[in-house]
Image 1 (cartoon, rainbow, N blue to C red):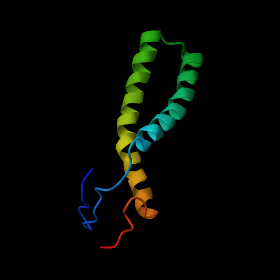
Image 2 (cartoon, rainbow, N blue to C red; image 1 turned 60 degrees about the horizontal axis):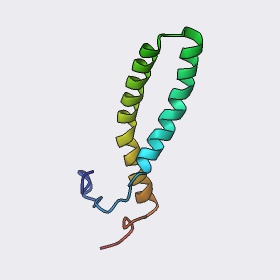
Image 3 (cartoon, helix red, strand yellow; image 1 turned 30 degrees about the vertical axis):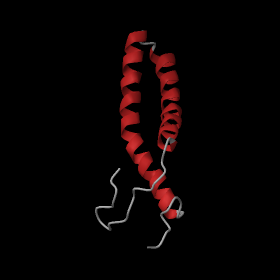
Length: 90
């Protein structure tokens, strides 16, 4: 996370995203991948190692894609609600 915005120079160092983005990523990826896993297993019956390799790589790619974006969402939500020091006037 950058300490300042590159465009408006807003200080971002006091955000408190903590574990929120990780929890949201797990929640979203689980809800996206579980139905697909069921559909693929029931309709195509691939070998277990093919299924594991396919869904592990898809899950990893989706997690790596969503995690930084969800962190930005959490920080943007905090900024919009003036939480954790974003509303302080200097």
